[in-house]
Image (cartoon, rainbow, N blue to C red; front, side, top):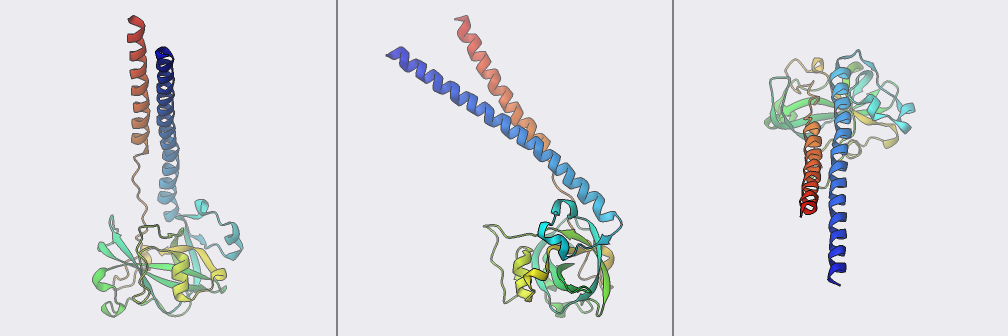
Length: 249
């Protein structure tokens, strides 16, 4: 009976060791896959914004819109800025312009000459300049204009994101659906992406400070992969050493 119990314990221990080894190898492999994804993202975010602009994709492309193909592309489109703005909380770091720190992205609706709508991030303003009355000359240009911008994917809230303050027109994520609803934009005619104006679109007064699309990302996946694979190797070494010692008895 005792020997049977011992064998059962050995079998359970072996299963736990094999399971732990498989998990460690799986985590290491996942990080290798994440490394390839992150390197492709960094390449896209580095190369696409400085390429020649292409026409912003219209409604015909939206039903099966490919964000991996379009994210960070420099686009141009013609239309007009509509009245009003909302503010999305933003802590700007690694800035390209003179301003940084806590503040807001100034987001406005833009109607193209073809009649469809898109949300445009005109740029960053510091916290003390959230009220448009504190930044004279920061209004968008009137009439029909052609703009250049970086195409960005949606930024929906997660479970820790504060709810928007609709009375203050203040958001804590750049959630296209929620912001479009605040402007009363029709969902069917509003682009599933948003646009960040390029630096050249900054008004003469400096606000909002455009050209602040985030295009730098931490890339620690190789380090993580080596750590997981190293732990798997250590586990294998411990098991081999234990079996060797037992064989020598």
